[in-house]
Image 1 (cartoon, rainbow, N blue to C red):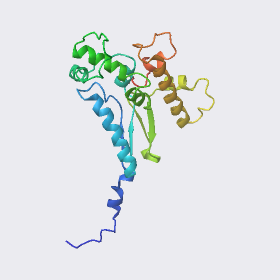
Image 2: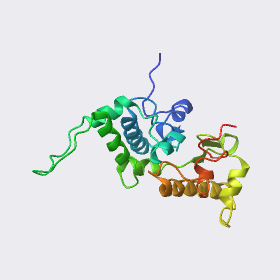
Image 3: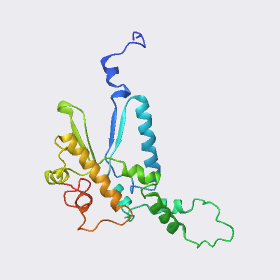
Image 4: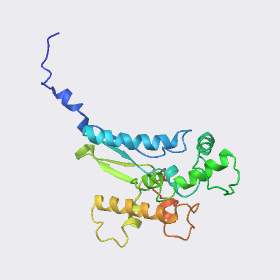
Length: 211
């Protein structure tokens, strides 16, 4: 086999360079086993590595990320909660009376704290876009956890004169979803009468819609 100068690149080599690699994770990293927190941190590290290599990693909002931000923890892995509850805590003040809690109970309390706006994990999940459009021409692709329907896009565009292009409309949708989550975070949901309900739970919610 003839030698080839390492400085020479074929078209196939060029197609494999990291700057052209894009990974889209479409949500539901959490509630899928006993390592949700590790996976959240892993994807953040992966984003940094991709940027350094010239690529991109996108992590989108799924309904399970939203559920955790809204205080709905019924699908959180019990082993992960117990492990979290067994982690050492700072030494309490001398003489302070600390009620004893089982590891699972303490882990659930700590999980709730981690999922609040202002915490590192909570803010990471809140910052995730609901939908992105990538590529160009025939390869232009919409990525979203559930789906998008005209009724939801009409709702997102109400009162927004700036949302005159598909890109602006998606940007507005992402802002509305993040705003709804921040307003309802930690409250175990929003009442049906709240305007945020349609975006978070309604039949056309982009994180719940399944066609």
